[in-house]
Amino acid sequence: MGTEKSFCPSDEEIEKWMSSAFDMARDALQNGEVPVGCLLVYNHEVVGRGRNEVNETKNATRHAEMVALDQLQDWCRRSNLDVSGVCERTALYVTVEPCIMCAAALRLFKLPVVVFGCRNDRFGGCGSVLDISSAVLPQTGNTFKCVSGHRAEEAVDMLKTFYKQENPNAPKPKTRKE
Amino acid sequence: MEPQRKRWKGSTYGSECGSDSWTVYPVLSDEQSQDVELVEAFAAPVVNKKETSRLLRELSSLYPMSGLQHIKRVRAVKGSPQPLEVLLCLVSDAPHMEILSIDSLLPSGVKNDAFGEPFRVKIPARPPLTRPQFEQAGKHWPTSFHEDKQLTVALRGELFSAPQKARMHAYMMSAVTAAKAGSELGMEAVGAVVVDPSTEKVIAVGHDSRGDHPLHHAVMVCIDLVARSQGSGCYSFDQYATCTFTPPASDTSQSAPSSLPYICTGYDLYVTREPCVMCAMALVHSRIGRVFYGTACADGALGSKYKIHSQKDLNHHFEVYRGVLEKQCEDLTSQEGFQRRVDY
Image (tube, rainbow over all chains, first blue to last red; front, side):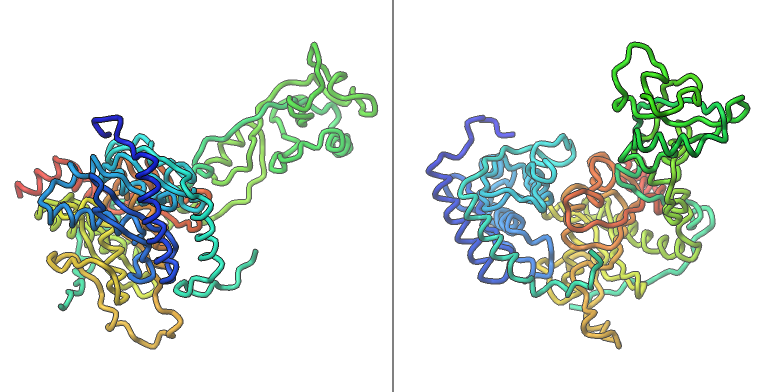
């Protein structure tokens, strides 16, 4: 947990960075990926950005957050900064509530705060399916704070648009008995 | 680059550490593993046995006890002058009464002198899903049970045949070897192996690499190695001799093109330690077929802290088994085990 409890993005910051996160999500949609986009911001600087790239990599864990965390790691290496020191003062801005996997990953990186758009009823790890963000998991990093609801409807609409199209990479479902 | 293929030593393990030295148990959902939930009801002995079926008809129209179809309305009591007892109704459905009596429970129409003294009894609120639940439920009141025979065998730890266990042993041995290799590089001693059970072929072997990256747990490493086996992926673990995958080119046999692998669909994962939340959910996203782990861990998400493989609302569920090579896997995690390895 951050040492200064005041570490929380302002409305202007949320407005600004979420707008970029939505651009990333739109890019995902145009590339046939689940439209989720995110930014990691440290000290008013973007140190990681990502959008879903599961189909591209055939790796189902390549969610926007995971891509951005890799970039943060590289950025710290290049800047010769300690990852945990940077993470302590980094916020994640993401269009959709992080899934259970990503929520655990964010804990492991010890990020203090996550700003997200809409809830994720299918996989959400910040309260929708499970609450990993605040659970007592002593071996899984730190809990983090969530600020939710910014441009939620827009984020949902993008997801709906995506799920209306069929995922061309998924195998054809066998005829199922309903 | 030329990734190494896994070589098998075959089943040359001594009997003291062979595949009969461990037992594999299924990790069930909460519904399947919880204690029997009880609900209170009124019951009474039947005075004249011959009237039982008529009384049951009348009772079931008076008190249908809906939602409790698994409950048998009658039970036999051994060595009693009145050998049958029937359930009258749930306590919650009974009319308000000062003193418990048949007259206040059964309004006119039912022959009240057909019953003995009513009494309170606790009955199972839900249908039993496993044999242990069925047996526990039966101690309170008899229920019906649609037995899943395979589950019963699995709960006895006897689901897998000796040849199957020998193969599982070899796969987990390979994960243990990978864990040790990782640990020698300063990583956490966790190893994992992905197998295609339809061909019995090892697709990927990986070990923890969180010294490089906090998220490169053994399972995450293996998931990316599987992606690489399918011609994609996003990391390179080539610097680790023990992190390998079966190159895709080597498997273009007669199999139909439609059966191209899709992420981890249909694959089995063997991992020395119970996966954490991140890894467990990564396996859901990857559509893993089954997971076998050696030893549990405190924050584990496939049995200990969560049961993500059976989590409601998620779109993919899978079977989980624990206990494969348990001792060897436990030794990896305990400091003591580490010390022992160093001393040898």
